[in-house]
Length: 387
Image 1 (tube, one colour):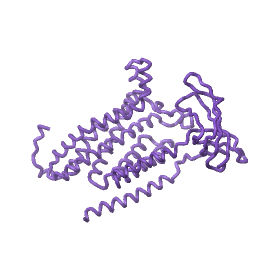
Image 2 (spheres, rainbow, N blue to C red):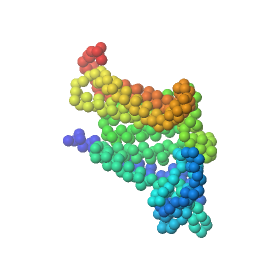
Image 3 (cartoon, rainbow, N blue to C red):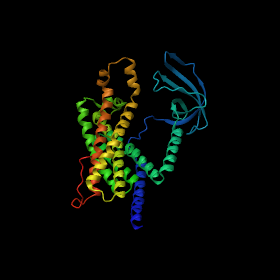
Image 4 (tube, one colour):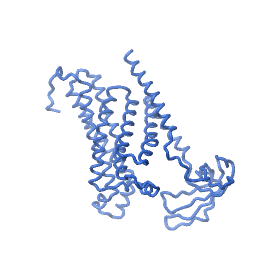
């Protein structure tokens, strides 16, 4: 029983420290909280009625403006009614049309006397629905995983806050994107694996395998990013950063750092899969030799890597399915499609991630072999010719 109490005590202390760090991250400023719109306020507004007479349609595109009567739901003008304008730009991905009863996020512009002079309907208010979805996810994961599920939610919170409060502000301040991505990514990996697997040998082995593979995937992201001749402007909204006064940012390095971050979760996932499986093998077969343990890890890896690489491919290409459809609908030759910068960047994302996945399996197996079976001299000879 004493052996069981020590890890629990360690985990409780770690979780308390983790909660303190998470709280600090929540409250520390990013340094970019400046108020862009002076004398303005964002509020929720209920759409009471709409006037669509200012809207006109050209083919599939709707342009013009939609006027709405709004009941303000919060802020200093709570309970007041005002007229708002929904401007339509003719882009389906950005435009929205409101109907009576909708809740909108509204930007109110005020004069020196705090009277409303203009109400701009930004978009539908979705925060409440997002919180419901998050709550459903939290209930399901805790119901099925119990305390481990609660720790998983904590790790997700840390990952989000680390990216929002450390990674993004650091990049905006000109810190080397590759270095900060490696630092933040590996910190997320370490804390996540310790939270999920506890202070155990399987967690340490998975951490070692993930950290080494993170360096390898970063290396391949940089090398092949240069070979593919793809710059960071391929990223969505990246040019807006330059026009917003951040023209000194290295967009290509940010793009390469993003490649590593995108696959780091899959690498971590496979590392703990291999490590947990070998930990279970050692528990049930304590007399297994080092070579047998390593080759067991390689065998497990062969079965898992195939499905994981397919998962990675589907995850990346799924987000670009509409682009592929446009190319095919236009009859674009396949060689033109795969030479285009957009698709080439996704190929770079996919296969650099796949390289990391393929390498993490044997690497974690080797680390587990040496970590679990230190005594080499006393191990029996194993015939590996049939493996």
